Image 1 (cartoon, rainbow, N blue to C red):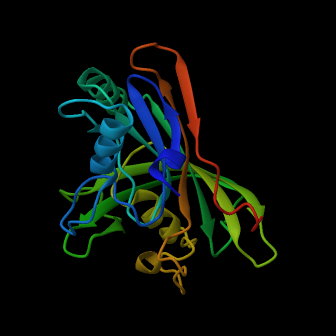
Image 2: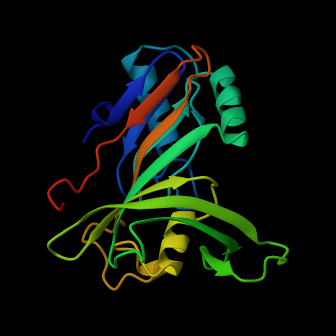
Length: 223
């Protein structure tokens, strides 16, 4: 899939991509090409823009995760979107394939998470007074169960902690398919985990109207 084919939405202020598993949003220690830099080059060439192209990262997804990721094309849009996220006026909906059925068809999870940077992993702690513990909150609902025994969940995030969905679902007893780090028994052939940023909903930073951007889930044939 080309970068042009990954574009879900674009206007003068924002551009949204359907990130593929394995792509990185922002440059990291691997030195691999990141979407922010690739987008700058793409826009510069497509629009024949002289000079530098602005491309601000609004939010990130883990490397093995797919789905909607949003970038700002102007500094004003980036500043306003950062404020929306800070005020939690930015709705994020994910879909995940898990290997065990949840204890109930829908529910609310609240846990305190502690991040271990050396392991690049988060853990649920019962010690709410731990100096690094952060409250993590989400809602989930069961959408479908496959003949193969997998379960499709929809998750709405209320906080944005490190590996939050992966950690909280695993702690509930429902590790995400392919997520070896958080308890899955087998990896996915492409190295992905079956977690997809399905939809974002927010107030457009310039037009001030509700904008909904959706990336179709990649497991249509499974359920």
